[in-house]
Amino acid sequence: MASAASQRQGGLYLPDSGLKELEFLFRAVIFQLSEPILIVDDDRKCRDASFGASKLLGLSRDKIAGRKIDDMVDPSFRPQIEQLWRTFLQQGEQRGTLRLVGSDGNVRELEYTAYGKVLPMRHALALHDKSRKRPGAAGAGNHTVCAQDFAFYLFDADGRVVTWYSGAERIYGYRNKEIAGQSISCLYPGEDTPGVKLQEELKRTAAQGHFGIERWHMKKDGSRFWANALTTAVRGEYGELRGFARVVRDFSERHSAEEELRRSGAPLRERAEESAIAGVASGELDH
Image (cartoon, rainbow, N blue to C red):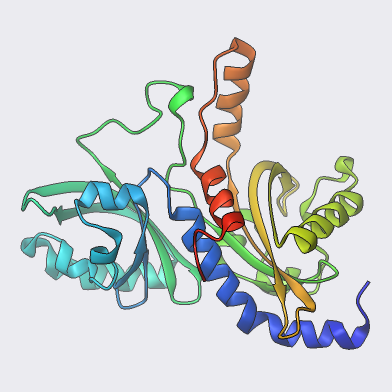
């Protein structure tokens, strides 16, 4: 257990240093996703893109980064962007259709789901080409992440919530003021001995620097969801443990599909998030 002084220091340190870890996690999570996802800032400028987005748009991630959404849409659609974006920033979530111009000059009509402020001034824009079948539509064996929101949060060395971002509010149902200072054990179903499970996860994360796991988490209303969680340790200037940064996604639908596959004896493919965890472990994705 950390001392009261170290808790205060960790709480002050985490929002700044921890945010860097969360941005790193965001990149790591979407890096190899087959679903087209863009990380966009408040000014509609792309900050990064998934492998799927690069493939769909026919552009490398480097060429996508720095471009505004406005410059990627059909000129006839540009007058609508400003109002759509203003509404999105106010509401925090939006679904609709965009007419994007690919590298070949052809216009594609794409469905999109936008999730606001998954991190400060960072939004997730998931795209889908309406002319193509969704990955996984033909069967559970091809099931991939589809328009997933991202729950990012920071907690101290004792597991108490320090910073809770908008995606976490949407997924878990807790407002920041409700959960700040609370132990994240409240996110673990009671029958799973949450205190013990939490301590095991924190010990492994502190020892390894990162830890990825899938298990049941619990929402504010008491309902459960299958959580895919990736956690990294946040350390101070001299290597002292300050706390943890975590990203969680709701994979309940995919979990159900995989359970059906297991019962049928069908093989399971490696998943993109497993590659993301490996990338964190190997240092493939630098901060």
